Every structure is written in structure tokens, then in C-alpha cells.
Image (cartoon, rainbow, N blue to C red; front, top):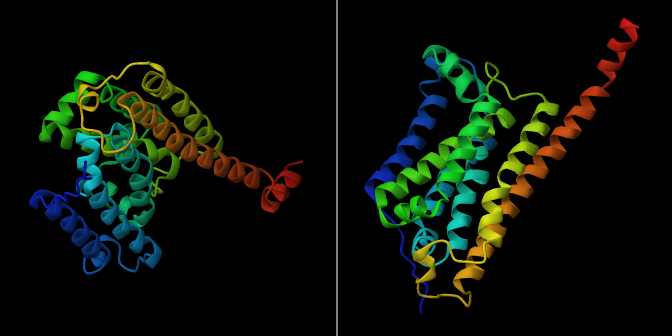
Length: 269
């Protein structure tokens, strides 16, 4: 069977992405006088933001979307992992601290954001969203109804932003947690995602009817496809988690052994 090559061109999606790009350009350009006069941003962050917008389009509007919806669970997992582990950190890194903090303070969002981005709340919100959408009845509902599917992707992306905030917040008002807490946070998140991975990989039966009866476009049985999807899920999770864990450990070690800290310790002694 030929591989489908359908690209989505829905006005809502295109207008939304163009609108975000336009708003970012205005806030960093003509409206910077209102936001934070004199503040700057590196070209690297600007490039990262627009690459993230392109990434969103390629993730949800390229043939990957149709192939993941109608044919292969494993490709749908690739799509979800991009929405969770690749695009949110790109957007966070691309947003300068002065822009985030100005918007938080001007619109009195500090208390609300402090709750939403607290490691406990953010971790629970992401884990619940991630787990619930893999329950067969909800997963199938998203595959069969376009609006539910859009809502699924939106909630995954938003809760992924919450999940990433304690790790790499761009804000000075609501900064990331300290390195030891980041390590514990990432470790707990890695553990609580094992049940979903375990069920998908070791259940021994196809959980989603759409993929069980879908035409085979590659030489994978439905069960092999499901197992591969579970493996894709865990690989993305492990790579992201171990990278953050390693960087956090290095940051912690460097902070504890920095010359400035050693001078302070000697002075106190």
C-alpha cells in the first residue's frame, strides 16, 4: 500500500502559528519599549523560537499526523514525544526572561503561575494527562474525532510546558528549582511513566482497535507496532531524563566546588 503524504492546511492551525510568530516579533521589536525598554535577545533564541514553530507544523500537519492516526501507533508516539520532549523546551529556551517576567508581573499572574508550575502540581498534571490519554477508550475517541484529537495534543503540550518549567524556566520571578531538586523531580517523573510503557510493551495484546485493523504500510504486525511505540516512548523519556539528570549533577557539583564558594566557606570557618 502506498504511504499517504497528506499535509494539513487548516486555516486555524496556520493562522495560530503565524499569529504566534507575529506576536513574538512585535514583543521583541516595536513593543519592546512597552515591555522592557533596552532589553535584548540573542539571535539564537529568535531562531530557536521560529524553528519551534516550524517543528509544531511538521509534527501536527505533516504526513506524520495522518500516518500516526490511521496506520501506525509507533509513529503516533513519535508525534506525541515531539510535543512533549522536543518542542516545549525549545519554546521555553527561546523566550527571554525579561519578556516572561514582565508579562507575569503586568498581568498579576505570579500566584497562579507559582501554583501551576510548582514541581508537585506540574508533575501530577503532566502524568495524569499523559496516562489518561493512553487509556484505550480515550485514545480511540481522539483518533475518531478531530476536535478531541486537537484537544489531546493541546493538553499534552500545555502540561509538558508545565512539566518542563521547574527544569528550565526562563523566568527570574519563578525560576527553575535547584539542581538537587531537579534531579529528584526528573527521577520521579521517569519512574511514574513506567506503568504506561509497561502496559504498552508487555501486555501481549493490541490495545487499540484502530491499529489492530489498520492497513499495514510497513512490515510490522499490530502488536509489534505497539511494542515499538512503547520503546519509542521510553527512549525519548530516558534520553531527556538522563540528559537533564547529568546536566543538573554537573551544575550542582560545579556550584559546590566553585572558587567563590570555597572562599566563602573559608571565611565562615
